[in-house]
Image (cartoon, rainbow, N blue to C red):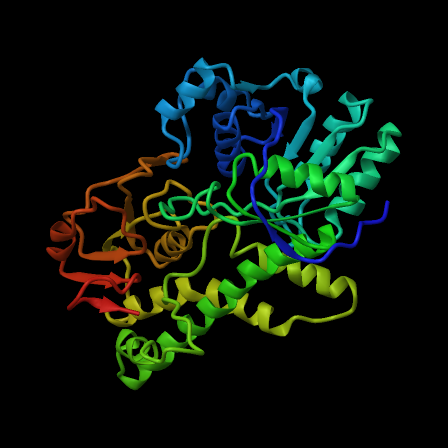
Length: 417
């Protein structure tokens, strides 16, 4: 199949007939997408292999902060959204959206096992042509080679295919599925147009690009841009600390320039599914064609080393010995006001502190439990490390602790990056 070549352009909404839509994956992306599409009047089946998750959704319990249980119950009661773990119930759908994780494997390389599972599901169910849309982030060529070609090999059906990489920022109250522009392209003119018409039924703006590879690459570029710039300010914070300069004052000064500068904040590292992982997918793509991406690799190394740097600063301030010290890490979610702990730098900080012999607990206003541990009180500790600040955290309690290290550079008159 060869992609139809079309110029990039911004499009405006048009009326699209209501569809039956199946979404494979009901995580942070899949559930939010399902509810938004259901609210637009489409009939949505949210499929996930996690039976416990489906049971929880079926009784109206949302597992992400951006979707309230009330919103979930409304679309379920109306009949527009049904969570399912029986893949055969997808059979009546005219559109299937793949919204599954694309993590790294144990060797740090792209892992497409969930995408491959979705391919198997689609191949086994659909014997007539439908529209298949991939929202899962992956390297350029995934839609064409890993999805479309594989489904054709398994089923012999020549479906319509489009790439519409997700743009969801958990906890962001300003930008949502509705008002965040989407980048879309299909493997044919017909698939491209159908996907665009469908997305414009629940989003305000779509940008059409010439091939799915452009859309897939754009997603990797967006988050690699953030990885590189966060790494720059994280390294800069180490330089300014050695010089005795205040990194925030330096950035404030630079930010007075009205052009040619975009401010990023230093922090404990990068977390979530996108920033720590998407650049690795871009690196993988570059190496496949014999090109090294040294800047991206170095940026990943700098951000990954921030927990070690933070622990070394705290250790130095305590006579290079943290054995037996009572330390609380505040905020184990990777960003404020979410429960998402994926790739959270806080977890690395906790592991490093414990390897130094410290007695470490953690406090999180939103993440109440993680594995076998629970959120503990802030008080009665010698050291507090602020990794993430949720709305509602008791700052006055934090400031009562003798030594505070603020990785967010939010509080005044405490140790910071």
